[in-house]
Structures are given as C-alpha cells and as structure tokens.
Length: 137
Image 1 (tube, helix red, strand yellow):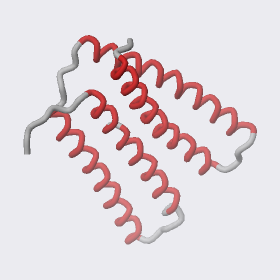
Image 2 (image 1 turned 45 degrees about the horizontal axis):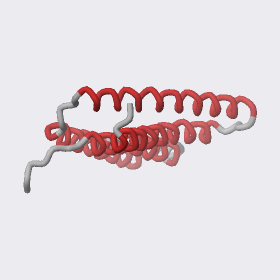
Image 3 (image 1 turned 60 degrees about the vertical axis):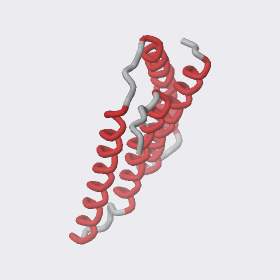
Image 4 (image 1 turned 180 degrees about the vertical axis):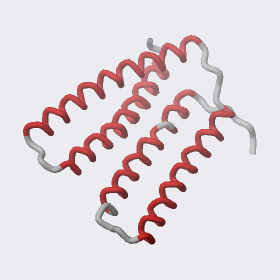
C-alpha cells in the first residue's frame, strides 16, 4: 500500500463522520431511554465506545497523511467555516423559532439539532469542495 497524502477535500469529507455518529448516538439514546435493564445499558455503552474508537482511529490515520495547508487552503477553510457558521446560525434560529411555536415534543427538537450538525458538516464539505475546485476565496 502506497503512502498517499490526504487532500483538503478528503479531510473535510471525513469530518462528516463524527457528526453522523452524533446523530446515531442521539437516536440510540432516545430509543433506549425507557429501557432500564443493565444488559441494555451495557450494550449501549459498548456501542458508543465502538463508535468513539472508530472516529478516533479514522481521524488519527488520516491526520498523519494530511497535507500541510498552504495559504490558499487556509483561506478556503476559513471561508468555508464562516459560511457554514452563518448557515448553522440561521438553521438553529429556525429550529428555536419552530420549537417555541409549533413542536411540543423534545425528541423531535433533538433530532433537528443533531441533524443540523450533520447538515452543517455536509454543507461545509461541499463548500470546501466547490471553493477548492474553482480556486475561489
């Protein structure tokens, strides 16, 4: 296996994995909330531990091969961070407004918040991909 470096696009796409794992973790917590058996609690904790170890292993393996960011890549990342922050700020405002007026179930609000993290990381990866491919800043 050759030792290839990971591009900035691949690095930002890999950062979507922790957000998806957060959504899965929230789903497991909601589904197993009513379960009070010790066996179910142990199973859920083992699954959570496996998810965390998977995230850490993936990030450590890629971090070693990651390219050193030059000035243009740093500007692309900064621009993508600013745009995704603005997007998440508007999204969380809409969720808070909808939660205060319409939704009465806290589980649905939690799914919207966890889904917002996933959507924000996907939007950030798309923005980095577009800006990096066009060479825009």
